Length: 502
Image 1: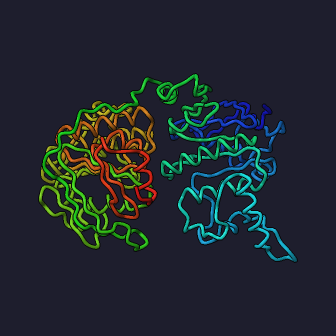
Image 2: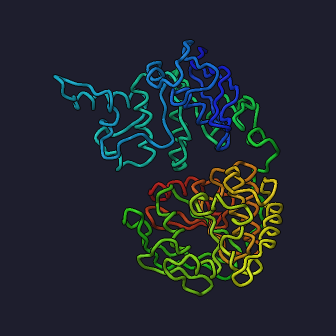
Image 3: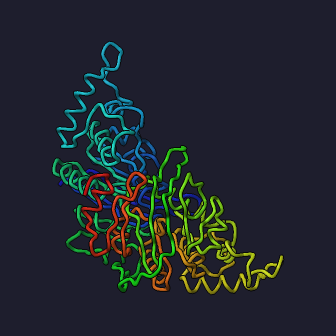
C-alpha cells in the first residue's frame, strides 16, 4: 500500500514540557492507524503538527512523499489532509449544507448557489454512505449526526488522510458503532485514517495498526491480532493493569440519599433536570448513564447544594439539604468528587496537604479554635499521599505541579478518607491514566463496602456497567429507566441514552 503520511523524528516542547520526542510513524492508503495514549501522552500535539496547527521543533512531516512546511494548515488541507476535531467546528444556527460549503461556497453570478450546494451535499453523502438531511439545522441534530457533517466537511475537499481526535467522546454506544463502521468503509475506499483515542475496546474493534504514546514518546506499534487490551494498557502506563473490576455482590440497606421531584435550570436558565426522583441505598453504587449534556452536571451540583433548585428536595439520612449551601451538604454527610477537579476540586496554588483538608480545615484535629494545627495537616497529608498512592515526593508540594491522575487522587483521597454517608462521584476517572482508573474504581468499591451510598455519574458506559450495582439512564433531564446490574444490556441502555424507546 502507498504511504500517505510519513512522520520522521518529530519533537515538540512547550517550555520545559516535552509533548513529542523523536516520533516516527507512517500511515498507509486504506489503513486505520489508532494513536493510543492517556491524556497528556502527546497525541493531540502530534496530529496538530500533521495538520499544520502546531510547528514542530525538529523532524519532518511528509504527505504523499512531499515535505510539508511546518505550521501551514492551508498546505496540509491542499495536500489532502482533513481533521475532525474533538469539539466540532460547526456553526450551530446554520444548516448542514451551509456548514459543508463554509469557506468554499459555490457561486453563480457572484451569489452563493445554495441549490447547487444542496446537490453537492446529497451527492457527497450518497458517495460515502453518510446519510444527512442537507436542510437540517446543526443545533437540532443528534451529536452523532453532527459528527457525520464534520466528516463530510473534510471529505468534500477530496481528503486522502482523515484525522479524528477522540471522535467518540460524546457519542452513544450505537453512534460509536456506526462511526467505526463509517471508518471501515472509508478505509475500503482508500482513505488513510489516523484515529486518536484512549478507549481500548474501540482500538481493538477498528484499527489495522496501533501506535502507543506515553509521556511524549512512541512506545511501539502493534496490531489487534498481536496484542490485547491488557497488553495495550501496560504499554500506555508502563506496568501491568487489572482492567476488570472485581467486586462482591452488593448488600444494599437503608436509603441514604433521596431525591424527590427535582427541577433545576442550566446556565442558560433552561430547565435541564425535569421532575427527577431517585433513591440510593447504603452499600450500593447507583450509576447514572447518559450522553453528556442531559442534565448530569446540574443534577450533581443540585445534590451537593452548589446549584439552585427550582423545586424538589434532596434528603440525606432523612435530613433535607438546604438550597445553595454546600457546607450544609458536606456536614450532612455528602462527599463530592467534582467533574472539574481544577475548578471545583482543588486550589492548585495550595499544597497537597492543605488540599486534603479543604473541607474540614476548621475542624479537629486540624484546628484548635482559631489556630490551625500545621503538624496535624502535614501528618494527615503524608499519610494520605502514601495510602492513596499520590505520586509526589511529599505533601508540601503544590497541587498544581501534579499530573492529572495524581490531582484526581488528591480529590479522591480527601473525599473518601472521611467515610461520609453519601459519595457523589462525577466523572471520577476523566483525564486520568489507566492505572489511576484501576485505583479509583477500587476506592469507590471500598466506600460502597464500608456502607456508603455511592452515586456514580460517568460519560463512559463501560465504567458504569463495570462498577454500578444499579443503573439509571438519564435522557433530556429525566430518568427514563433503572436496571439492576444483572439486567443491564449495553444495546438497550444505548438506545435509551439516545432518547429512543427500549
